[in-house]
Length: 353
Image (cartoon, rainbow, N blue to C red):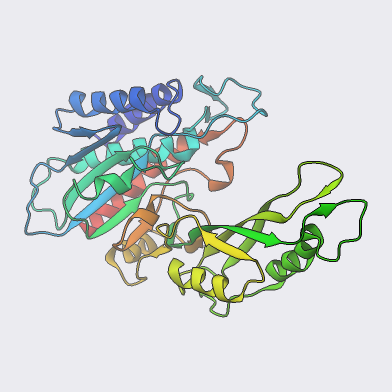
C-alpha cells in the first residue's frame, strides 16, 4: 500500500506543478486535491481553496494531530531555463515550480494521511489541511481554518527540511520606520538632511543586539531591507522611509520586540505591520521529536517562516526536499526524497499512533 500511495503521490505532484497556483489563485490545484480524496473514498470539506479531512475513526475524546502543507506557490523568477509549469523528470529529479516548496511535502502528507485514514484505535485523531495562501501569509490560508477544523493539540507542518526535525522556527515582524529632517533646496546649506541623518540610524540597526539568545534558534536577526527617499535631484526630502525585517527567536514575543524597538531605535517613528507571525516550537521531549530521533533524524532550529506561525500549539516542521531550493530557478525535488518522505512520515506516526 505504501508503494502504491507513493506512486500516486508523485503523479499528483506532477499535476500540481502543471497547474498554476499563485497565492490566492489556487482554485484549480484545490480541485486536484479534491480528486485525491474522491479517488480514495475519503470524505473531505473545502473552505475557499483549503481542503481538509479527518480520519475515519475520529474520537472527540482524543487529542488531535494536524498534518498540514500548502499548495500555493510564489511566481517563477526570470532565471528559469526550464518551463516552470511543466513537470520534467531528469536524472532522478522532478523539476517544476512548487515541486520542492512545498508540493513534495504536501503529496507525501496526503499519502501518509490516506495510509492511516481507516486504522482503528489510533492514539491521536488525524486532521489534514492542504492549505492556501502560505506564501503570502494571506487571510484565507491555514489561519482561517483554525476556527473551522477540530481543536489541534500538536502539528506536523510539511516544509522541505531534508526530513530532519525543525523543532523551532523563528517568527517575523516587519517594521516601517521614518527618519525625519528638514526639507530644503539642494543649493542651500542644511545641517538637518534626513538622508544624512539616516547614516547613524542604519549603523544603529547594524550594530544593535537583542540580549536573549536561544539555544535552538540563536540570536534575533534584524535587517534593513528597503530604503526610500526623495523625488527630484535638487530637493532635500523631509523624511526617509525604511523597512526592517526582524526574525524573532523563541525567547521573545513579537510584542516584546516591537516595544524594544519603539523605545530604543533612533527613528522618528517605527511601526510593526503585523504581530501575528510569532516564533514556534515543540518540546524536545515530545513523542513526535523522540520518535524522529529514534529514526535517526537530526534536530535543528529553522530561520525560515511557515504556517507554523499561525499555530498556538506545539508544532514540528518536517518534510522532503531542501529549503535552499525554495524560490530558486529550475526548482526541483528528488523522486527518492518523496519516497523517503512518505516512508519516514509513516514510520514516525507508527511510533506515535
